[in-house]
Image 1: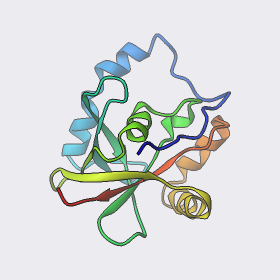
Image 2 (image 1 turned 120 degrees about the horizontal axis):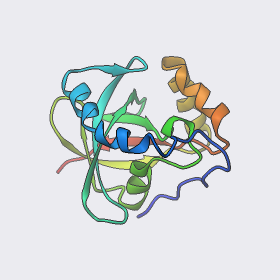
Image 3 (image 1 turned 45 degrees about the vertical axis):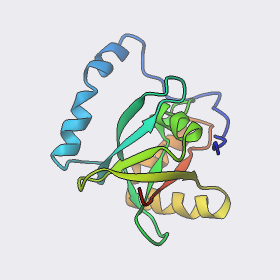
Length: 157
């Protein structure tokens, strides 16, 4: 079952076109940061592996994560894309294939299922995210889209 993402925004932070090739060349640095246990905005990193919404190929992304209040092994991630008007690519992948997810927080890959939080549950999670990493709050001043918050829940293989 697919997840329906909120609409894209009409404004947001955009990476200038001339910088995009440099960023693509630096994509491997995220994996190095993950393997070395670095943090971003004070948050630990995880490796999210999704199935490409268009390609059907595995895609890995390194993201900051937040603890979840749900019982069991679960993690929260935010589709902020630095306040872009569009959702990050991995969010489209999660929406298309929420049951085909793998998560590694440095202890090995585990299969997981994604769900997008909504309503009061999302609002409460957003408050906790901004409390733990205040930089996320600034993203809402850059864009008019709702930043999706996903729960990744470990499942038995």
